[in-house]
Length: 286
Ligand code: DGL
Image 1 (cartoon, rainbow, N blue to C red):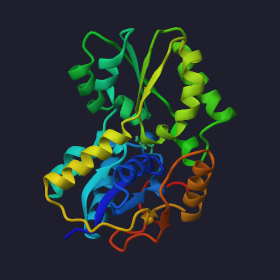
Image 2 (tube, protein in one colour):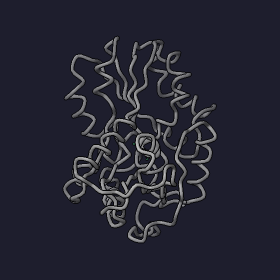
Image 3 (tube, rainbow, N blue to C red):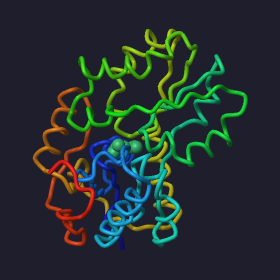
Image 4 (cartoon, rainbow, N blue to C red):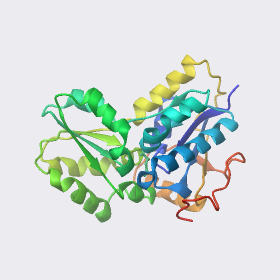
C-alpha cells in the first residue's frame, strides 16, 4: 500500500501538474516537495540538479509515495535516467511539448521556451532530432522568468519587460506554436495569451504539458496496480519546501489571487527523511 503520488519541483512550478492531477482525480492523495533552497534549477549544473532530484525522490519514496512525478523540465532533463536507474517505483518525467507543437504548426515555425539549463541540455537536443524534422525550431532560454513566477509575479511590468527582451528578437518570425518547457511558465498563461500574438506577429498557440503529464502519472498508477487510498474530495495536498515556508505560502497566495486554480495546500515541515539543506554546498536564498 502506498500513501500518495509524490511530486517535486524546484518551487511552485510543479503545482501546475498537481492542479491538473487534482482536476483529473479530485480524490488523489498527493505529496509535494518544492526545493526552494536550491531554486532556481535552471541556473544550476546538471550534477547539482541530479543530486537534488535523487534526494527529493528518495524523501518522497521514504514517505510511501508512488509514482514519483518529476514536475520539472529542468530536473527531468538532468536526472530522469539516474532516477529510473536508482528507484524501483515508476518515475514520470516531463519534457517540452515539442512533438505536439511540430504537429500543429501551420507556419512550420515553433519555439520552445525553457530555463537556460533545459535549453542547453542534451535531452532537448535529442527531442529536436526526433521530432523537429522539417520544422524550424527556435529554443529560447528565459533566464529570470521562473524567478518572477516563484515570487508570485505572473503579470505586470517586470514580466512584460522580460518577455519583450527575450522574445523581441523573434518579432514577425511567423512562429505560431510555443511549447512551454518549464512548469513555472504554465502560470503565465493569461500573460502569454495577451502578449504573444502581438509580439510574434501571428496567431500563437501556447502548449502547456501539465495535463498530459498528469494523465501519464494516473496511467502509471493504473498500469502498476499502485494502491493509493483516496482522500476526501478537495482534501489538502500535503506540501513541504526546503526553502522558506512563509515565502512559499505567499507566492501560492499571489498566484491564486491572480487567478491560478490551485488545490488547497497543507504546508508542513520537511519530511524527516529529507535532510535539512543548511550547510550543503550551493544553498541559496535563505
Ligand atoms: N519548474 C522548473 C522547470 O520546469 C524550473 C524552474 C527553475 O529554474 O528552478 O524547468
